[in-house]
Each structure stands twice: as C-alpha cells, then as structure tokens.
Length: 481
Image (cartoon, rainbow, N blue to C red):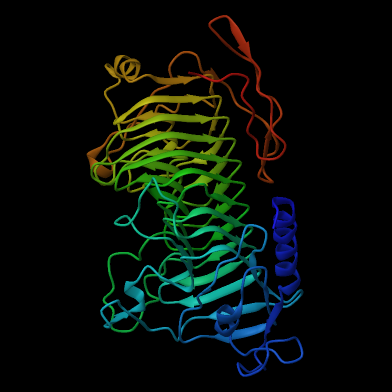
C-alpha cells in the first residue's frame, strides 16, 4: 500500500468511526437488559457509562435516579469524538446519592463515604468527556469530582491521566464535601454550573464524628492545570466559594457569581509546593465574609503570578481583599490587583478585627501592585495594613509594594481593632491615590458602573478611568513592571 492509499485508508477509518457512533438512552422506566434505545432505554446511568465509546452520546430522560454506588464513566472519548452525557432536551435529570454510604478501599475494607474526597459522579482516569445539564443532589461526600491523582502522584512533567473534561450547566445541591472538585486533572472546563448547599457539616454518614468543619470548598480546584472556571453561580453554601489551591497553575476564573457564604467568595491558597499563574477577572461577589483572599497556608509552599482584576466585591461582612495569615503564612509574590470595585466592605464587630476594602493582614509578600481600584465605603478603613505606620513606607519600598492611582472614597480615621493573630490593621493611603466619592449609575439598584470617575494626576501624568460594561470596574491603560 503506497502512502497516498494509506492516508485514504485512515480517512475512511475515521469516517467509519463517526458513522458507528451511537446514542444510548436511559430512563427511569427502562431496563438494563434492553438495548438502550429511545424505544427501549436502559434503567441506570452506569449501564450507559459501561457501554459508551468514543463519539457516543448518553441521553438521560427526566426523573430522579437514586443510586447506591458512584456513577463512573469507564471509557474515554477522542479529540474529534467526545463522549457526551446529557439530559434529554427540556427534561430535568437528578442523580440522588443519599444511598451511597461507604466505599471499598484498595485493601478491600469499607470506608464511610463522608471520609472520602469522592463524588456521586466520579470522573477519573478518562479523557474527552462532557457532562451537560445534569443535577447531582444529596451526597454524603462530594457532588461531581474530576480526579487525576493526588499530591502524592502528581508529576508536573507528565500529563494527568484525567484531562479534557467539560462540566456544563450542571447543578450540585447539598453535599458534605465539594459540590464540584477538580483534583490533579488537566484541561478541565466548568461552565454555567450552579452549586448550592456544599460543605454541609451536618450532612454526613451516620456514625461519622462531626469535625470542626466540613472538608474543602464549594468548587475546589486542587493541583489542576490549564483549567477554566466560568459563568458559575455559587450560593448558600457553608464554607468558601471557589478555591484554587495546592499546586494548581495556568488557570482562569472569570464571570462567576458568588453570594451568601460564611467565608471568602474567591480564594487562592498554596499547599504542597508552588501555585502559580492564576487569573481572576469579571467575577462578582456579595454577602460573604471576604471577597477575595490570598494565602500560603502549606509548609514549604509558595504562591506567585496572581492577577485579580475587573471584579466587583460588595456588601462584605469582612474585607474585599485579604492577604491571609492562616497556616504557614509563607511568601506570596508578583500579585497584581487592579481595576476592581470594592463597595461597602466591612462591618462592626467582625471577629477578624478592623475590616475594609483592602486588608493587607499578612506582611509576607514582595512585588505587589495594587492600582486603579475603586475603594468605596469601607467600614474601618478603605485600605489598611497590619504594620507600624512609621516604618511602613520604607518596608513597602523594600518589598516593592506599589499602591497608587486608586480612587478612595475617603479616610475613615477609626481606631484600630485587634482581631485574628492579635493583629491591628491601620489605615494607610499614600500619595498618588485619589480621594473622592464616586457616583454610580444606580447605586440603590446595585448597578456600580461609575459615572463621575475623576482624572487622577500623579507625577505630572493624568490617568482617566474608563468604566467597563456592567460591573463598575475600569480597564488599565498601562501595566506596571
């Protein structure tokens, strides 16, 4: 066979594989002994998972599917032949996991489900898989977990065994662990999903002792690479919202809405090594304790190259931005926070002490750039530091901390209040920032597009703020190096 005929053969083979792709149908009225067609569907989603091959589609008819074991896709798709799991158009599919009480460990023993970082839907060691428009509810562990390994198996030089996974327009409702979790997987997209009631410490397998808190966060991104978390809605959960942590890298978090949480809406936190190259933009949060927090909790860990811009944080009980001191409180560097709007951040009698728009609680940082933000109506301060003000300018210069061209509503002058870690956060707004009260298009209607942002003159140069379309921030005209 000459080379020309060989390529024709490969083309025909690829075409044949697409022709052979089929649709498997599941319905609550079906039977796993049936052929899995629209006329004679399967009864269980797992049966369809067992059968689906590259290029196939699994269509699930509406209804509640109560499962006693995890739902696990077994086969991978291909770059041009994904396996798609979806609800039947116009019908709601709910996978109810309350009957999953325990899992079998590799040694054959039984472990209570609440002790596991596992999900009712477990996507593991597969690739080119898409889940669409499916709800997972009532999990004593996690809702949907995408897993490629752990901190013990992670090799940054190798591709994760779990990659090219899409969760789109899915919902998780009530879980002891994360609603959605990504552990050491590559190229994962979570888009348009809703997470409700995650990290419920009271929702666990009977007999499992209640710990001080439930594990992980509503959406946990742990050691993942090349990920995108976007257009999701998280609310009424019991811990943090979206947390990018451990040794995650090369990811973006954008256009998400997070509200009504008892902790931070967005979090970046290094554990087990280096976390780097994460960008968060055009996100909104309200009615949480903190808006965005940056920490390095894990031992021998480091965090660098974080971009937080064009976000709106408002009506926070605590700070809009927090440099946290939890855990090891190790070095974070190359942090850019710009073009955000912080409105009514802070409230009286918060356990963390004085609170306001920007709270630089930890002093373990270098190469930090905070510029062109709106800081409006912070409670104790608009911008504050846990430091001695007399030495602060010199210390900031030594650490290359740039704080300029921000529009600050005014100086509060409130007495500092002691809080966590016996820290006093003191108000500090250096020269090069603008003091002035912004007016918004509809402040009472929570439309924070600014209408009268004055020019800021620093070092003989005038900077004009230009509002973005809807969230009340503004785009940069230069980048600090």
